[in-house]
Length: 262
Image (tube, rainbow, N blue to C red; front, side, top):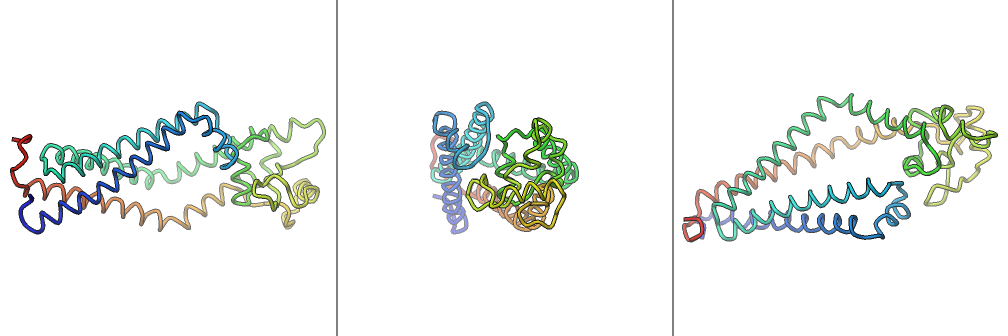
């Protein structure tokens, strides 16, 4: 058993911390396997989440989730079992994994901080591309209905879109998801005629039409919740540092009862 009260406390806290990590890894693995193996995954994504995703993209997401879950499970297993058995090898592997994870998170944080404007530009360009290629089966419907916005910069972006220019006679100037709606799917406008007329004439004070661009909404959402995101990220990093400190302390103060490490 680990020598001293501090070492013993480090051991039990390390077990608890990594047990949570291990369980989270199992959950991620389960979700990833379900996405890859289940035929119901696509239906759930399209009908309940209202997202338009092709099979290839969905499978890529599933494999990515499996990869994350596998890594979390492996880290949690090494940390938990290493602490229980006080195995220098398993604790050492756990420390290496945690240091790599911590370095990756710090690098990602620095990248986001330095490339903030570039990331925002890419988000806007992607939104403009989605608007330009809108064809009634787009994730934009979910975004526009959820955040009550229209287009990338505003509703006039649709005047250069495939959606607008492919009509034989102009019957719609914006998708129905740009109009005020009372249904959960955001597909049935309260007053479609008034909304489309407002989009045609540029009546930005009409309450039936969402006139704010989705990029502005997303930008404001990120800025308003930046403190929470920073706090959560800092909390995760602190927990990882604590885990590394506990692991190092336990490894240095363990008792030599583990025959497999001699």
